[in-house]
Length: 377
Image (cartoon, one colour):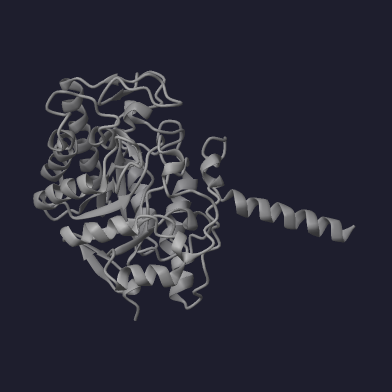
């Protein structure tokens, strides 16, 4: 049996294979952040598709930290029933599920809340953000802890802290965004302080046997951003504190063409696994499980990444939008490449009135329909 399909554990959570659904914003919740039937169906489909660990799209821990329209929320106890349904949709179909806890920072979209971040930084396309005061920081740490407690009560199997992609915790880590001169800025130790405090608050709330993971950039791909070397140092601190697993990604909204992901169709395996070199450096120093995301489309490459020890889990995002059953297909012996072409047009659907879907698949179906209509005439 391939290592990809062996059962493993992350702390107290058993995972039936080494495939992870990386957190992906679905835009399938109501305007209040409550999950709807479409989101429940999405979660169920991923579990039916035999994805080992399903991680929900980023769930905002506070209203000011909302990043996108129709984003699932975990900011209030009034959402517990909704959250329970999300966990149940995965469990009833044989899967395990983590909820990703997130705060958008300077990218917050809440109309009633001014965006807050590490510094008075203006990022392209966002409203002017103000630097967090110490009271804001303390309050934010508590909201992550509250959200983690809700996750436990709702029946999730784990939580993942979102510290990647230029959202709040990523902003604090990055000297590109973080221009502070107090205990939360300047040195790497200070820039990592908020992430460390969020982790410690969550761990204190959920206990030692409940899995707590983090998603972090391998680097920002920005001049003056966080580097691979710094991320490894932060990860060593988190490992010593008891973090259970780390998912490695990369880049921010400001990275543009410098980021190696989302560059269009992946025509060969050497264009997949964008962050493999960073992962190799990571594994030389870090002992806790590494989840690697970034451009995986080919089964042989996923198998190689695991068998060679580059990573412990392979995470998929865009391929599962088009093929939520991809892992099940590979497990059954159909090892053909994912039908996703990495066009990234799915990202644009999130800004329409529709929820997340594969725009390329829709285009192909419309073309087939027109062709069939033409033939019938």
